Image (cartoon, rainbow, N blue to C red; front, side):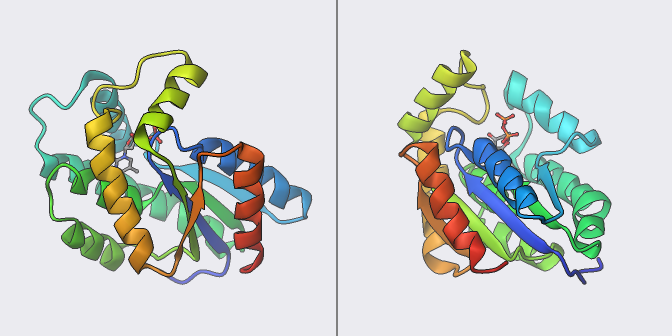
Length: 205
Ligand code: TYD
């Protein structure tokens, strides 16, 4: 896979309800107004694999094994990298990506797969971002936000408190060890999360 790039690759990570999507929109707006050429993307995508993932999200895991689930996210990412991310970076754009392989390490790691191995295969297969903003929040608070904002019930496969506690522990561990990952406390008004994130991003612009 061609890893050469010249744009800026920003990833936003965190558990469900941490505010990633809202932050991505705000950052896109802010950077566009500053005159940068910005694309906002998300994973999972709406590829063939992304659609299979959506089914799991809505209907639960059923008999799908963790390895198969991991494979779906990896295939979806391969598609995203080739079709969206690399071409945009090559054009010199800023890519803001809502979830990347850190989500795979944390979420599929929380299913019991060895997360150090998931990290290794992802880092070997896909380009590293320039920076990762990790929105840190307690899962109970995140889930409360989801119910309040979306007005619906948390989704079956991914949005259970005990599972998200495990996911968060892996995110926290990754953030401690990886200099690329900048932690932003997300249990605060979005304006503050945005301000903090702008400070972090400004350093690499
Ligand atoms: P997302 O699209 O962010 O959720 P929503 O549709 O509610 O906006 O992500 C869907 C779920 O997929 C989310 O709970 C996290 C999970 N996920 C993984 O388990 N592994 C991954 O590699 C990625 C990218 C997401």
